[in-house]
Length: 325
Figure: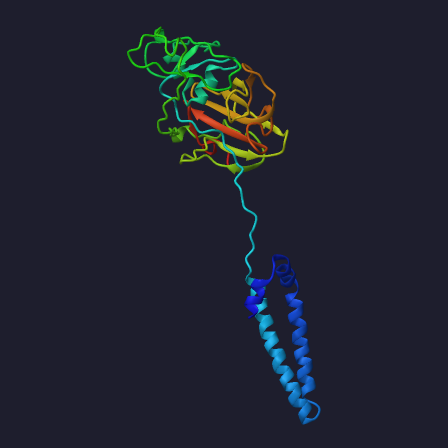
C-alpha cells in the first residue's frame, strides 16, 4: 500500500516527501513511545484502548518505514558527462592524387596536413631547398616523374582542399568535365604511426610547450589523437619545445585553428594548435622556451594547446620526448 502511495505521488510531491520523511518518521516514533508510556497507567479499559491505539500507530510507522526505504532508493538522473575534448582531424597519409597550392600554404604545412615527410614530398615533386612553392602549383602524392605534374589554379577564396586525380594512361592535357578538373577524395590507407628508436627518446633537448593540465594523450587506436592536449588559461604563453625555425604560422589547416609548425631538424617538426594569437612569423628562428603564441580555443571548443611531434612526417608520442613532471 505504501509503495502504491509513493508511486502515485507527483515529482514535486515525491521530492517534498523525500525531504521531510525523516522528520515525519522521527515524530511518529516519539508519539509511539509517548503513547506506550501512557498506556502503562490508568484503568484497564483505558489501557486496552491505548493498546489498540499503539497497534494502529505501529502499522503507520511500518508504512512510513517503507516510505523511508523508497526515499533512500529513488534513483536520480545525474548530469550527463559529455566529452568536449575535440582533437584535430585525423587524416592518414595520402599516397595518391594531387594538391593545388593555395595562398598561405607552405610545403611544410602541406606535408603536415597529409602525413608526409617534407623532404620526401619535395623530392617527389622536384622542389629544391628552401622548398618554395607558389599558389596554383600542383603537389603530387602519387609516384611519377616530376615533369608530369599538372599545374591547376584553385580559387584562393576556397577553404576546401583541392585534390585532382588523373586516371592511369590519361594524357596530362586531356580535358575532363569540359576542361575543368574533377575534385576527388584522396585514398585513405591505414594510419601510420612512427616508431621512435630508443636512442632518439632523449629529453635533454625538449621542453614542455605550456603549463597546465594534461587532458589528452597520444593514441594510435581508432580515435588516433596524434599528439597531446594541455588545458590552460586564455592568453597564457605557449613555448617552443626545442630550437628551430618557424616553417608555418597561420590558420589554413582545418581543425588546428591558429597553428605554428617548427622545424627542429631534418627529422623532426613540432606543431602548436588552437592558439589565440601567434607571436612569431614564418622563417623566424626560435629557441626552446621562447614564447611563440598565446593559448586559445581557435578550431576547438575549449581553451587548450594541441601539441604534436612528427618524425619524418609521422606522428610520435610527445611524452616520449618531454621531461617527466
